[in-house]
Length: 108
Length: 115
Image (cartoon, rainbow over all chains, first blue to last red):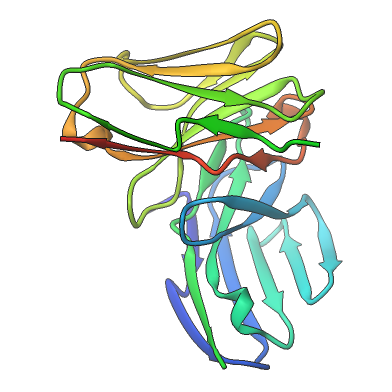
């Protein structure tokens, strides 16, 4: 079993839909990161959180430390949100452990 | 301000050769981490350097090595290349070591193809 599991692996949505991507982890963490990767490879850091909830524009990230679970929500999705979304957790040795990513495609 | 820059952007090498990849962090950032991303997979941690010292190493063979220079730029070296080393190599910089939960800034990566 991977230390960081994401679901779903692939997600297709219609423009305007509310989207949720889930991340579960099995290791003790210092922080959890949500990242966005576009075709071509560049990665953008969306959120880093260790408790509670953070919001940035149409994006919301939550984390439940007790349940070892985090969610990324996108409200009013748009085709430009199409990308791979990756969850990564900060390990005790200062490294990051990544999930395999969720490929999101938003159709107009 | 310039973001994290990596060079080269693309590289083709033959099995057995060696390769050097370069990364310049955001100005003022003291930590650089390297990751390998094989097609269809999430990135895998290779190394972390902070203040020119290795602070973490992932599960990669000794063919992989890295260093950080006084200006905080970094090089990743891979010797005796194998076909399986073909991947996107990502560099990320942060102000502090990842032990201190510092936000990460990624470069666009170097795509290495080994034939």
